[in-house]
Length: 106
Image 1 (tube, one colour):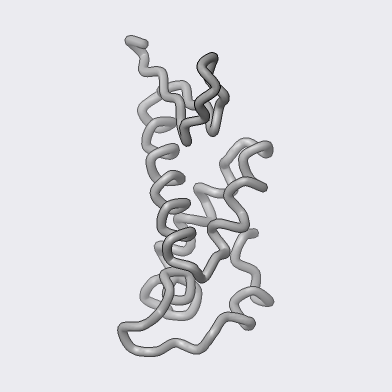
Image 2 (image 1 turned 60 degrees about the horizontal axis):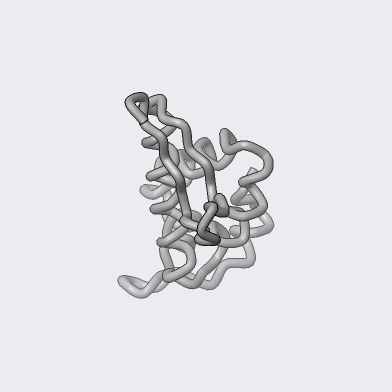
């Protein structure tokens, strides 16, 4: 489980229109379906990817959390399309993109 009760209990208080995304997902009941979706997506990641995502998805820094959320959503979309996805591979030219996706047509 990513968002444990201990993690939720230690989040900052909720303020109208001023909350980091992770605070909203964990503290506001109407956002529970989104939190559950993140938990599901995270839980279905290959084990080697989980440590790379965990700290980012627990961050109260929106810049960190939002980029990780989008990477996770794009990863999930590609997997559901049946595409092969490598997370943070090192390419032959030394570059390390967030994702390397190979579609069915390559």
